[in-house]
Length: 182
Image (cartoon, rainbow, N blue to C red; front, side):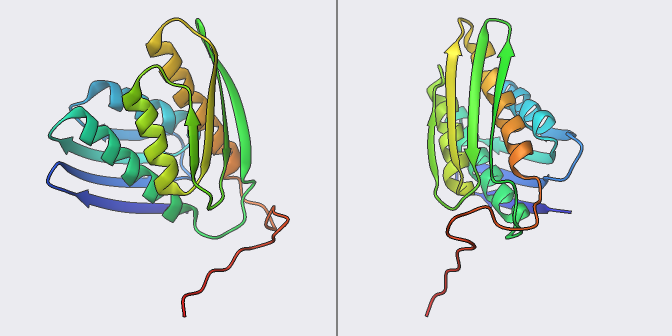
């Protein structure tokens, strides 16, 4: 199983997280921030991951940011070095919202996500930077901010599920990249 456990403690937050990317979409999330809990449950279900999370923080910004960092770090560790499909996308409708997310699981972190809430734009950016992935999210239409944000989490989860599928060889014109410190 591709899994990882992260403990992240700062003056501002206390986070314990366990992630299994070969899961069934099951989430056990303990946090006082209800919308974050809802979005993480959505990401987990659509990603097909199993997530156990206990997180508290001094304010919503620090909590959302640090959970994203811990989740990205766990995702990167759980994935390991084995070849995966790497590149995937998903278009998700949710009522008035229509969102596309595209990911590339490569050590070239970048994030550009349309999001009507800066806190969740920051979530996606923090996740992408700590996991080392490229992440794009585009809102094609939508009026309800909740629907747009939730459709984005669904699209990102679906794209990640498709991107982490194991393959026999590395999908790259560079082949496998090896870094060494001397």
